[in-house]
Length: 258
Image 1 (cartoon, rainbow, N blue to C red):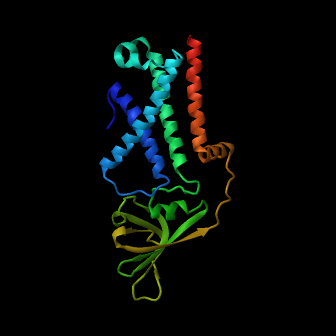
Image 2 (image 1 turned 180 degrees about the vertical axis):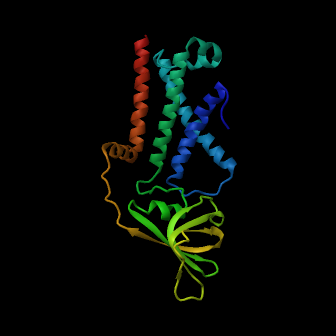
Image 3 (image 1 turned 180 degrees about the horizontal axis):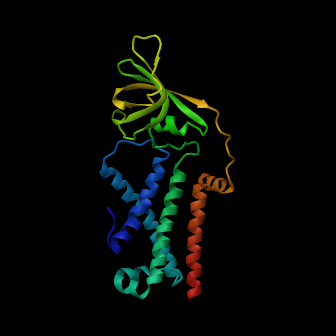
């Protein structure tokens, strides 16, 4: 659902965006549980309201202490349309500041609640992990696929569909292909004319993978990537400093306007 009015956009930014950010971060370090849509939406809204509430409070206090630093919240609530028409730039700056502060609080809270030893959890399938992530540049993935009837088929991985249910996926193998029947001792190679074979996921029992070839040398991370890694390792410090800079910027702008 896409917000279609200004009020809906503001509500989305204040109540939903920080909660979604926190929820997405939370899922990267916690195992996903089977929950109802109502529970997930409630958690997103609750965290969004909390983070935005703290951000609104800080900006309102700053605006009260230093007039002009942020929108006057009491005046804004008394007559929103009139205040926005008279102070469009200040209102927009205050809204952006509140949203950014709420996002910073979401990042900092998640990092503080996450143990240092916690590992990042990737919400991806085992097929993607084995066929793509573990296949470093320079190698090909050779598969030995055993079907439920005992037949074993080997070949190089050429692709697969991405349905969440493995039984609904398809696995594509490419030449050289070979098939070993359940009672056979040796596999029979298919003729070279047969280049591709599609296996339905519902018929697959097990998959074994071998990585063939010489891996390419690992390139050293560039300065930008190292800097990004540093920020991710110190997420709550980075978010806190960013929030402080936002408040300082509002304070300075308010002093300049006086």
